[in-house]
Image 1 (tube, rainbow, N blue to C red):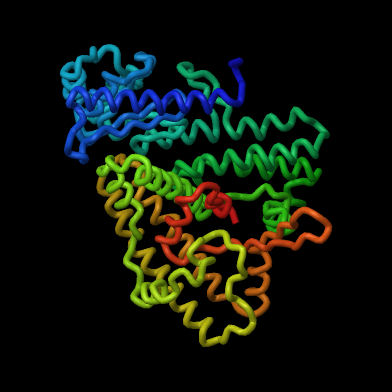
Image 2: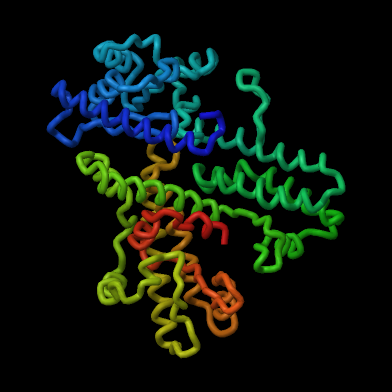
Length: 456
């Protein structure tokens, strides 16, 4: 097949699945496939990027040793955050590898450190040195590693070892090359730069996102003024806030992602990845019990639901399908004029109680994260932080009355007209899931639109 053929990824993916099955069959013949399912190696591939892991280091290395496909040994990276460099090298030798052929990222060493960073680590400053790896373009490591990676993506860098990065800030500044072609500038700003912001928010903490994108947000607003041919004092405050609203609300569609929006985007990304992986493993690779249990523990409700919430969920069951589905429903949520003030007040009190409980759970997780110096935000904290924003938002919505409640409902619906002159208009309502379990249920589906709801 010619390079660029759209079928290449499909055939390549099928080939990697075939190689994985051959490897597992070969290991089973050797007697190396452990009976204890708590240590069976997990292998995942995305195109030519592979990942192999196990609670037992020897099992992961054995899988790599006997993998029935040709992988570039120069790209092998051994990652073990709880072992020293000496221990990692000993594991590689025991598995039949030459440690010199591998890059190592561990408790006290990284093959990707500069000479200066190595010297700093030897002086006892590992926490202040970037330590981690990139997995499918996403940073996985300590706080310093993630911060430098996100900063580089947002603002660029002129480091000699990596050259000039094409950052989101560079993209905004480069729009000036289009001169008076304001339509093209606006479209690129809306559809290219805005997606960069969402991408950054998905793998950074909300606080880090806000910090590293401050200059980028200012550059975007300067570009909006240029497109509108307005001076700073003519286009600021409420006018800029309106311009950065969605198109459906009269804005330019170049939305400003706030700290809260970033928290929801990160949660949506994490919960979608975890829930879909768990669902697929349960269906196709149930023998990987240790992975499924690990994913299940991460997807537990970050706080115990109040008793009245549990009772409500049990009584409603499948009857209220729009609640079960979460963000997207074809049915109109029960927010009409017939709802009594007593019912609305009870819903508001319940939503506020749930928001308070989630905030308390988040503070506890943040306290635990803070105990480890230099540690990046945990996955559990990422999930809880986004869910806390959603819970507070649900409480705010529950407090709306009268005209404000009707306006919110109108802004939360997407109308889709079917084909044909007499086709009916389909209304799809965007709603926040009523519980974290419902969020996970929704996240396990393909095209779940969770990230789309992060900016609204």
